[in-house]
Image (cartoon, rainbow over all chains, first blue to last red; front, side, top):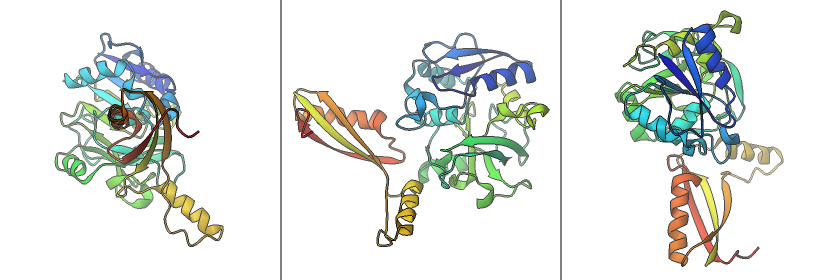
Length: 228
Length: 87
């Protein structure tokens, strides 16, 4: 099992993901350059957080056309596990690998804090080692995490169990106060129909070690191990 | 022919615009309570080569659809001027 972490110009959580996978979780991992047109021999792909291309135009809008994204789309189409974290989630939306779009946080502030999310679906490559209803404590750091989808896309997500994570309070209850960015239906993470592509705003790679304040990210990243 | 395309990209009317709402509140706090609604969008100017106006329009449409706007949340409109336009 080998993870590949894609590096875009402006990625800034690529090293965090690499470190968490290698040092905290004991996995093989390598970087994949945005200009590459093939992924090499990796079994899972992480699109890390950051500010690819300076967030110019829209978050993720320019990264979506990076040469590597063609290979990522092919890998996803073959059922390979792909996780977009924060800016990586925004890139997956712009690339059309996941439905919907990101709006600026309703509060207009950049929110950098710990939040709680409830696991809604375990039928994905990045939640299969969690249990349904489990409350995870994860860090966020974003200015545009206000997830939006039209009524049709929203219905499609809800009816097919494709909402993976929802913001909640420490007891697992949804509320406006527990939602840091105003996202639709408190959505923090979603998947594609097959469950191999997942996008999430919280940062699991930042909480795989007690030293960093939490270990709830481990089950997210380790879910990809053995996924097929 | 050279054309100047002037493009406006706005959030759809059905999508909440927190930035516009924050600007409206600031205007209200400056005493401009008569401003009832503010929407914030993007203004882009492109200089491009095309055989004629129709081809230029088709190209700008394509660019807006593929990259310059996100059809999930935004809508766009544009005008075309011959040459680099009235600058």
